[in-house]
Image 1 (cartoon, helix red, strand yellow):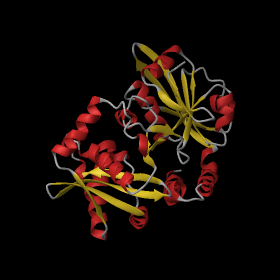
Image 2: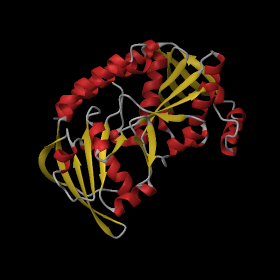
Image 3: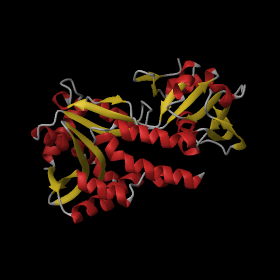
Image 4: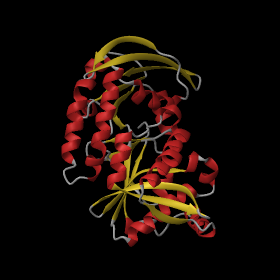
Length: 333
């Protein structure tokens, strides 16, 4: 299974740029879903007994642990080691639950199967959502005082933007900014683009570098799609949290937005985040006036909530779920 998943990850990377930038974007999305189907028909089963808030919660996961464990961990904290059971079919709610009375069932399901789970009362949690906005309305007129203060901080620090063009510029960006930032934020589980994807980004992208006192302190790879600018991958130098506190991460977005307006772009695709509403990156992008939209390449989990304790956990940690027509907030209702 691990070798299949590694191959699947490589295939997904090959489809990333065409899916988000090509006028034929629907074709790579369909290809992605077709190739994912055989890998999402059966799933390994893990059963956990979680102690949370004085209660004992039985949690069943069916499918990849990498996709499902973060959902349970976000709701209940560090999860205990599971007991493992025989694999189950993933194409129907009845096959997944098998009459279980567990407090919560998490199942990795294929997008083509998701509607039947939704009709059966399950909620569909995407692995990620994308953030879009119209540049004329970013930031909003009623933006927060904190956002305005950060804009003033950029001006005081004399942070400026320049475009990198050489192969050494791209090498510097990936090796000293993007990759360290990913490791700093996500640890060993961080997504690291392959050399092939890095090469593709350097061919189709425009490299924006934030400079302070002659030193490059951050950057972002931007990719054009008609009148939309996609912020594909970004980072601060060495993933340094001090630079984040000094406003470099903020400056990457703010200065790139200003540049995009000057170049005549109308819309911004600000990349992905996870689905949980209270995450800091969610709040940051909302303050800019960006809105979450469906991510066509995200895998999804079907979630069954079978107890009040689980619904209360979602009330504390609301999540964006796919409604069939878009996204909505699920808070355990």
